[in-house]
Image (cartoon, rainbow, N blue to C red; front, top):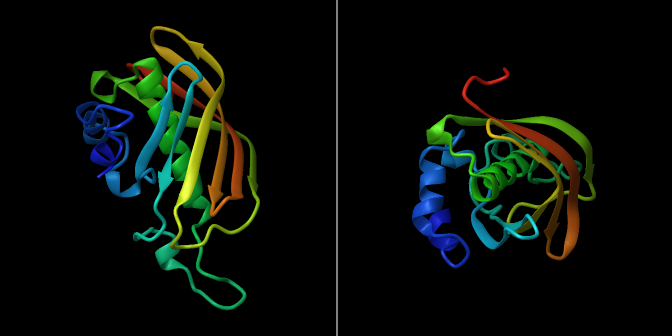
Length: 168
């Protein structure tokens, strides 16, 4: 489980609270381990294990022309998971205290090559901008995901976290 695998960088009870009250079920939380959490640099690094059941990858019709791979949807869900971790760990947005979050813009999304099923994906997210208020936090992130040392995804995305009534 994420909380135990990440105990060297985040207290397990804090991470378990994040998961237990999260905006999505743990089955679609595509961060399996946190390997670095740097609040002063607003950076999170972790691993996405691709040898487990993935909802879209499991439904692929595989052929020589269309090899089995981690889908774009699963990659984007991993960015959302990291974004939520930033809000929780660095900005105090607690789901069980009335905070919610929504991705609101993909400024750029570049898939550099297919992410294969099997080898883990090394995840890196860094906040590049932030506006933090008492009931609204707007964050912009740069993502870089690598598999076996090669870049598979680079993204520039924003998300908004609000306390109380959502903007939906």
